[in-house]
Image 1 (cartoon, helix red, strand yellow):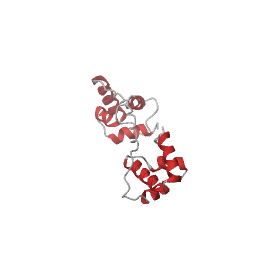
Image 2 (cartoon, rainbow, N blue to C red; image 1 turned 60 degrees about the vertical axis):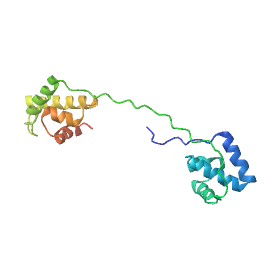
Image 3 (cartoon, rainbow, N blue to C red; image 1 turned 135 degrees about the vertical axis):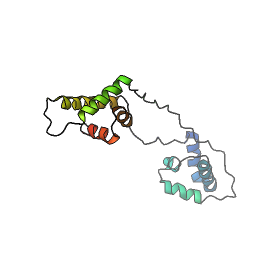
Image 4 (cartoon, helix red, strand yellow; image 1 turned 135 degrees about the horizontal axis):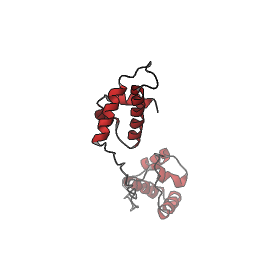
Length: 163
């Protein structure tokens, strides 16, 4: 997903007017540039038809004579509002909370030397599988920790094995 925003484009009529003014009437050209900037147009959008940098557009702004009245220019179009869909948060049921608590209590006794087939090792494996499933459903690590009766860091540590 790109965070780059799309550059607004000057209307064709305004672009043609700017190009014509630059060659015929520099004072009006500079006034038009300042008017576009006061309407919120970005430097890049103004400089794009000329193939110049933002710095060049700033130079044009500096050349504006304040005694010249600013012409009417189109305002910057508003960005379309994009509605962000909120991910629905999965709510743990009371039964799921009790199961997490039970598994967390059993898993807390697992050590490096606990053999593979032990009930506590199986409980730890089941707990980790449930934690992954619940985080994929949108349950926060803090909510999982609260439900299991353990610290946030212990949940993060268990999930870190699988990330």
